[in-house]
Length: 106
Length: 121
Image 1 (cartoon, rainbow over the protein chains, first blue to last red):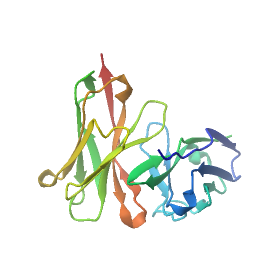
Image 2 (image 1 turned 135 degrees about the horizontal axis):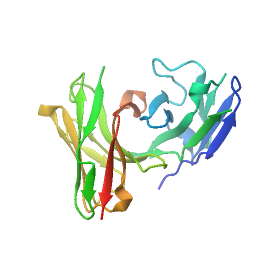
Image 3 (image 1 turned 90 degrees about the horizontal axis):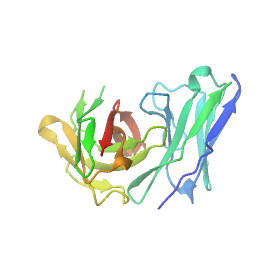
Image 4 (image 1 turned 120 degrees about the vertical axis):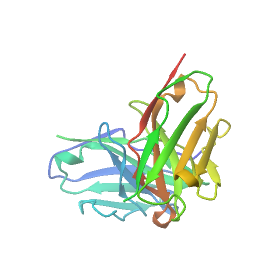
């Protein structure tokens, strides 16, 4: 089965840039989306089609996808961005989520 | 604004069938080109996609759960439902319903608040 691997955790200082990676075989040939999940809340879509932002998502969230790796970048990270982040892609009509990355803003 | 709300028993006995319903409000479950999915998350763990249904009734399931899962749509009540049979403690999780939209790469753009299901022995 298809797998998406993310680093378990990442720490970033306020105002700095956080980059969350997501690795999978030939991932660049698939569309990747990213969701943010704060504690006790349902996930919220922050990136779709590799790099597009839904309405209401701040411009500091951006994405890219090439080769075997997709990346979610949070520029000028704020305290409110502290959350778990999951990448997601489809393989053979099956949705696959990444293992998740906990982003801590110190 | 479309909203989703899960409902169903919070406690299910092992070996029995888990049944949940997701009510769609703010729009018709049949009026747009969307799929309707179930996703679960054990406490402290990641997200696992269970399966999805289209308004026509066609379905896709996670191969790891396919033998135990059934998802159906009830257009008259603007709902879709999940049935997971022969449950064990490993099925204890928060269960979310979500909408995925092909126009945006089948991303999950709307989620319910989730409902916690515990499987008891």
